[in-house]
Every structure is written in structure tokens, then in C-alpha cells.
Image 1 (tube, rainbow, N blue to C red):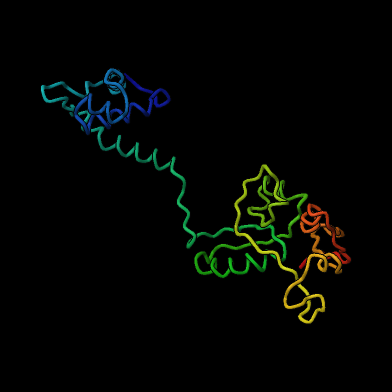
Image 2: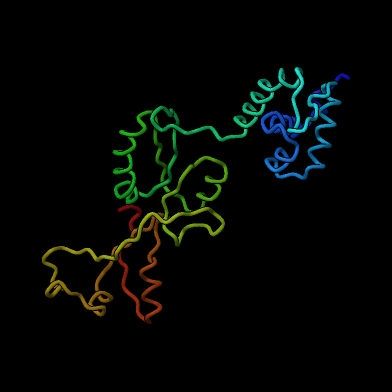
Length: 232
């Protein structure tokens, strides 16, 4: 009987491999998590495919024929090769030569990318990193199209349907000059905070409201933002 590869079920080869190793239909069925009748049916199909009895029954189990023994090594190799094809290729950062594209603010450059690059150069010298400015209106499409691999952005600006992972939490601080009269014994009241002129970083440009203002609004307060800049 001539068998076309298009009609050969790879599960039959798995069954043949199990039968060759176990020399028992019952044990082969347990190994394959199948019923004994199912494996017996697969053995019948194998006999038709290879036009050979493949196994003969004895009191101690089944004994492979010469044809079955000849098939043992190539069948195991085929199963190994197929399994290898289905496994993801192992990533070796030490030999990888690829380019990652990051979207980051200038703040993220200083806080994340700079220390990241120092470690990357040691562990993956062949990897290059391209950093693009963050554009909140385009970051979703950039990630979906593969134009950007990773975007370093805040939770407030992360689209809900994107896979996200928190890198770290930060504390809120207020920056002013060392001898500013508003600070008494390193303490500033909320009233003083709201009364002062504020500078705000707006990457989109021209905005005078941010997450700080949202937090103040929940308290029934507001501040006075007099300067809006597009970078830190």
C-alpha cells in the first residue's frame, strides 16, 4: 500500500513511538492518555500505512517486527524535529543584533533609558536602541503597527486596551530655589502651594492643567500655572 504524506496523521507516529518503547498496548495508551481500543485502532491504521504487521502478540506483550525496528530511529527523529519546529526560538541577548524602538519623554530618558543602556551594553552589546519622542495621540497606533516596541508613559496617558506593566512608583515633590521665602523649616502649606506661580510640563504643548490640578480639584482647590513648557 502506498501512503501519501498528506494523509499520514502525525499522531500515528506518536503512537508507534510509544508502542516501540512500551512494548504494550495498555502502557502505550496510558502514556498517550488514550483508551486501549483507541491505540489498538491506531495500530491497525499504522499496519495499513506501512503494509506490515509491525508487532506480534506474546504472553509478555507485543514484539516489534524487523520493519518496526527499522522505523524506530527515523520516527523518533521526525517527532523530535516537529517538536523543535513548534518551540519558540531561544533568545540570547549576548549574541542578538536587533534594534529596539522606544517612545520616551526626556524625563524617562534620564530616569529609565540612561541606566537601562548602561546595563544593556554589558549584557547585549549587539542591540541598538532608537528613542522617539512620545506622542500621546499616536502612541497606540505606533505600537499596533510595530513602529514602536515599548512606550514609557504614565498610567494616565496609557490607552486601556494596551498591554501595560508598572515599572515603579514615584513620590510627588515640589521644586523651588533653595532660599525661597515660601518654605519655612522645609515645610510648605497647601495654601502657600496654591498661591504660588507654577510651571507645568506639557508634552503636547500649551496646556496649563495636569494631574496635579485634577488632584487639587478633588479637594476643591486650584493653583495658578503661569508657565507651560514641552520638556523637563
